[in-house]
Length: 413
Ligand SMILES: Cc1cc2nc3c(=O)[nH]c(=O)nc-3n(C[C@H](O)[C@H](O)[C@H](O)COP(=O)(O)OP(=O)(O)OC[C@H]3O[C@@H](n4cnc5c(N)ncnc54)[C@H](O)[C@@H]3O)c2cc1C
Image (tube, rainbow, N blue to C red; front, side, top):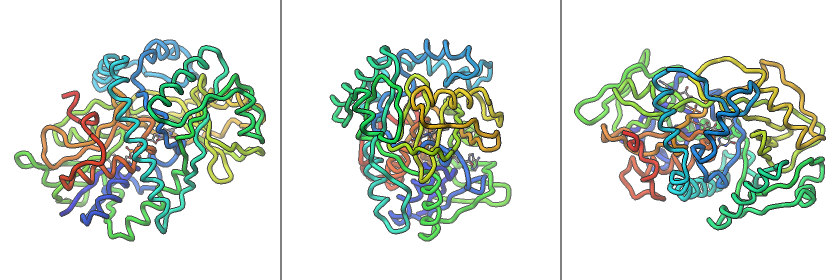
């Protein structure tokens, strides 16, 4: 049986990984040369702690306040673009406690499964991608955020996750090389991190070694179907047939699906990151809560990142938002001397955001052999292996490792 995967980000490569282990013949098609996509420059955090979807109570009013600052961490570019209007309406309708209560157990389950799968993958020959299980620190400076974060940690614990609230002194004991100017922290000991660039390179090498065919520099331009089956795809130069098709095109899913006369609510959420080698090294990855900035030690360097600009794909680098990241760091970590990076040293990527903050994993309603793997927003790296495993199980019509009904791609049809 042959599977054709469109998109070689973490979702596409993870799906190839589990399909080839199951004995499938696999082809991965990507329009890039696979040396960069959203799955490379991200912060590498594996986050069972992120069981609350982006569409949650409070995000709308907070988002509206942030809209008026050019350095804010969250921004929706106002536009009458039909994709954005449809997405925005569904986002507003999803940003409520009911969505959070319904989604949280599923987001937790898929995150925990994925973390376990990363641990298994890291034991295989050919893989050494800096997986570390030190958890993630959520640092806060204000009473208001302290209250929210400590409440969130209690909820996490009630869901069986390992999270502890720390005083500033207790947090300092875990970061002996850092000065911390914080009110306190929550340490999500259930989380982990890795070096995404290494992971992506090693996955490609492993997949090639296992016989997966890569068709790169090839944008899918046409999708062929007969009755309720996809029969093939066409790139500029090649026509490729298959038994099962997996669309894992990240933020470009709507455009890819349009070739099959299908729609999916999804918007790109642009974020920035950059690497530096400060004199002092951070021990545990950190999220600066009020600033919404993330920092992850990777090898001898530290990666800084953040911002979420909901807008169509574009190549502008908003230096004000990057400055917002740079300026926030010394307020929490005064000793971590971070410099404003040169424009050409700034990486950006587009998080594929579903309106309810829950990924799309499964068959759509229209074609019986078309699987969707997209919409993972700020958790795609974290959820890659679990998504790949679930899609491989669905492709083989096996019972899935966890319940997938919450991830139904047809839920907005
Ligand atoms: C600043 C930042 C920090 C982040 N930090 C984290 C983190 O710490 N933890 C975490 O879990 N996640 C994080 N993320 C999110 C994560 O990076 C994404 O969710 C994930 O990379 C999405 O993977 P993907 O495979 O869906 O898409 P991508 O990696 O974007 O891959 C999609 C691929 O599809 C290809 N493609 C698209 N259309 C076509 C077509 N028509 N024909 C052929 N090929 C096509 C593209 O070329 C691309 O290679 C972060 C993101 C950003 C921006």
